[in-house]
Length: 421
Image 1 (tube, rainbow, N blue to C red):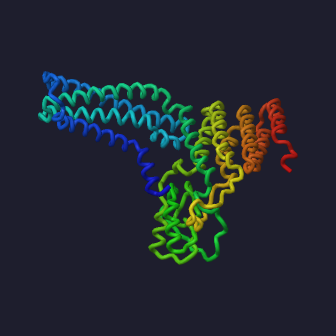
Image 2 (cartoon, rainbow, N blue to C red; image 1 turned 90 degrees about the vertical axis):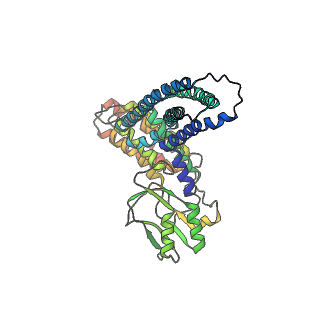
Image 3 (tube, rainbow, N blue to C red; image 1 turned 45 degrees about the vertical axis):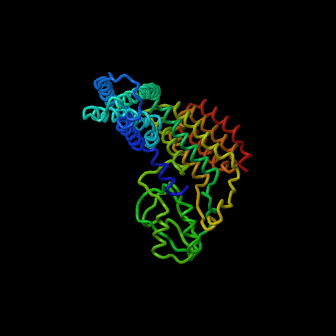
């Protein structure tokens, strides 16, 4: 994906984008009703007075303002609930929810349409035929608002609840992991040891990598005959002392700035193209649920189920050996990617730290690790190490002897000693 395509994708997810777009549609509909009235045949009773349409528009304007305020309050409340009960990382997914954006934008657009229509009526913008067109548009808008309101009532009952947050984070993590499984190196070659003569290219900001424009980077490398060794991937934190890449070949100041410009940075991580953030967010939800103040092992078990589904996105490409770039010029780029040890650690380290005192969580955790090891061969060593750490922690945490014995039998059946050799 090029940089502009990625920016457009991100732009469409912003709540203000749909609100502005639908509000403009409302303004155009109300404004053009007077013009469209000239083309309406004179077959409608012109006794449809100015007050008939104006009264409906006044009711619509006042009610839509109240509904918009209520909807915005409900959305902000859901954001706060997700931050306190789940993880702050989930709020960006709630803000990008299309159902809530459509509802808020529709209510705001109806309010703007009503205001513009009232102004047009008071200033004499509409003739008799124009009021007929405006009346028809108002009835259509009322129908749209009623349908949207009914859908919004159904949606708001679950919006921002724990199960809803877990599902949203899981879906975002699955999309990023599936993208990672299809091509771990974004079309380029895997990372190799950087030659001694390669020049480091340093950035200027302290921020996270959001996106790397691989097509633009490949064009620069091909134009100047460069070999680029990327030192970062989406989700990496960069600072002025950390190289963004190492380059083989002569690099001018202009080329250096262009190379840096292929990377989009931000202060906060995003789920797009970053498989680790989804795992981290899910593990944070489970860790908070297992805290003594919350003590909710059921939520932790749901998160473990979600983590298993995320990791199974890697099962379709078990070997992970796609090393042939999809475009010839991408052969000039080498890119690192997270290894399995990092992915497994991001997902299960916090749960292992907090959940060994809960017998049901420990049992589900070792079963989840076993399922990952069976489905993804390259994850088996990392999963086994996590399982051994879990067994040691359960043996030390002072649980009831019956619980320890039960877990020891389960662990021995799932992770036989001979499998380690």
